[in-house]
Length: 445
Image 1 (cartoon, rainbow, N blue to C red):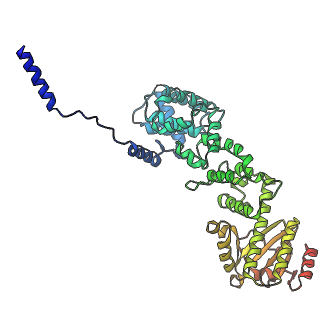
Image 2 (image 1 turned 180 degrees about the vertical axis):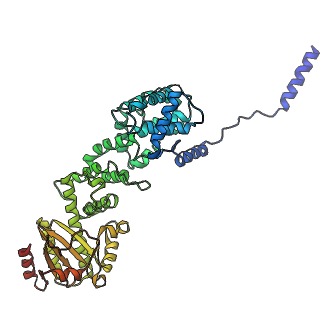
Image 3 (image 1 turned 120 degrees about the vertical axis):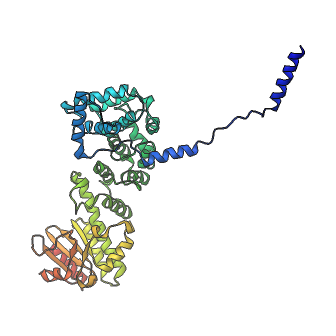
């Protein structure tokens, strides 16, 4: 008994000398999360999208490998790059490439988690096209492996549970966009690295515009629309922007917005998609003609107001206000079909400082230049029916040409010379009697 008691005493003594056990707390994970987010933001795509010129070669090379089952000297990155080519719009229905499409679907079902599976999610998102076989097949295959996806796509699947339900995903994503004040930023935050260009985002864009359209008379909805179309830290949306601008203009089909709003919208649209009077391509090539006519009328009014406001601010003459009122009344009476301004140097500086969008307006694209007389004279060039009417500031006479006159100045030119216009015109009148002058204009147009 004494030996047992001695052993217990020794054990108790040793335990008393041991330091108290301490529980080690895990370090804060915020720094790790920030680092992961930073890496994903800097390198959002696992695989670089191949150039168009390389895609056919990649597709045929992959076909050869599948047919001959030869996989030497190939990387996962090249396999995914080839998938981009196989499932793009030009090749996703080609019969000769069917073995390769089947190969990718089989690999999705059996491949271990990692770069390949994550890369194929990107292929699915980018090649997404509603109602197509390839989209449905990829969605079904990836849905079965959704638990095996890496963190790169987990944010997206959490925010968009319908991601791999091809018929539901665009509607759900469109609704998410509608709930966001800045849809472009929101889509990037949930994991869509290229919100404007992926096929899924394009499908959601159409739904978003339809959902937003009834509210576009409200400032918040318009801001939301432009946050998406012209993001502060992203490219201007080009493909699909036409219907969005049509939706915006359709609000004003039967009513006219206030001048300040009309000017603001005009400048935003021109800055993003060019002036339809100068550019017929881009969104303007298939634009609704009736809505395009509304926008052109806005621009006619805006250019006339810019000219009139510039003269009012820089010219102190009792004869100017009745001239200004005369031209604006002709516009209100829908007699002036088109208008274009050519500013002199001094007037351009004034216009640059006082336009709605200020320094963001490209003066070289937005207005013409008048170069004679040291740029001291500015011109307002109008089309009234089949006549071209040129009026100028200060003592410059009003000149009227037939539109088919070879000497008639053309609208929307970059440069004008007021003295050349004056010398080539045979029908002009000064403003020294406003009553006689206004009657002469009406008789000659």
